Length: 140
Image 1 (cartoon, rainbow, N blue to C red):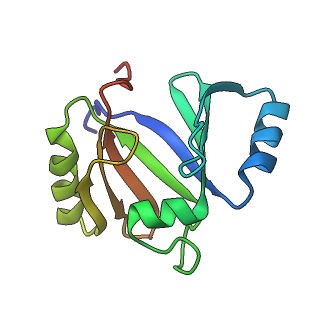
Image 2: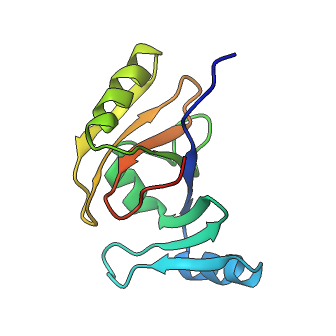
Image 3: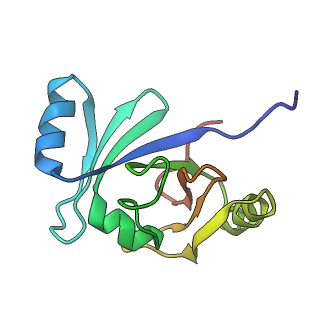
């Protein structure tokens, strides 16, 4: 078996009611890592060891990822994120994912909060984000 240098860095839950879900996860004792003050792009992030649990409105995740997350079969409520060390690795991973039969839903772009990311669905329709951000470099 090959040794992997990859880590899963975020689990993003697409939520209908962000405030309700923030209250829920805060109530469970998750430590708030960061929260957007931008009303057009709200989110909340909770630190869990090396992992971040991110809450993001469904309609914004649909827009950003370039695909419907309400109507396709399979996992339709989360986007798993792989954080890479270098910006150019985002496109490299997208090419690799496509070669392994992933469906590209959005090619690399610079989101409103910075960095660089792209989206694909794996062969069973789980939504993945490949992302790089200069402020969020994770230990390997």
